[in-house]
Image (tube, rainbow, N blue to C red):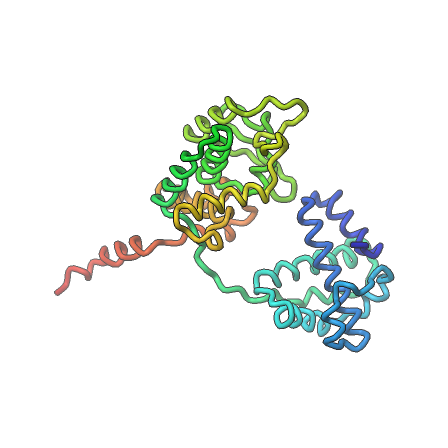
Length: 319
């Protein structure tokens, strides 16, 4: 996808100054490109026929004069389009609003290219708060037991190690794939999180044993620093990890559409909070969240906890 210069400059800023990840840059580039393509069709009359071929709209000529034509009304029209025509959920629309706000801040505040910033008035779509989906303690054990049934020793120890780290440390998929051999020092694991920020993760005994047993069978590959390797002896991809997790999830009778790799992160956070008596601030640091508000979704209470809480009401003893 060829970006207009004004967008390319913004993406370069996000990469070199803000230190955003390649994935974030890619998502921002795509989201803002779709926004600009929509604006072009809107300014040209906005026919539904044009919207069907929105991806093909040319935007290489978009400049600051074009950007300054866009009003708050246009922005809300775009959000309506995302909702009704692209079926974007509130969370997805909120992410795209954040991308737009960053883009406009770059043009308005950082580089003084435009005279007004309509995104200052743009509200984030209201999102429903749902408890995260996670594996129970018993399901987590069943998942690990299923991995041990693998006949290929290398595959078994690799997959077992990855899942043990997911379930005990709650790291992200991108963080796990990015681990190098020298990222592990005794009980300390160094990962690169969102925004290319380095974070220290402490390994418990289960993780240390799993890592050591995997390294013992990991092929000695020259010039390949990755800890977790594919069958081709290259750094394992995020999709390959997702496929392996989905396979085991299915084999223990759970729906892989509900229990994705990210749900293992939810599981780790839930188990730490429920059984490890970890406070919210500690959990925030373990998960690498910038805001404690993000961490609070993991402090949900299960039905048994709620039942016990009601039973402890002193009025429970009244007949």
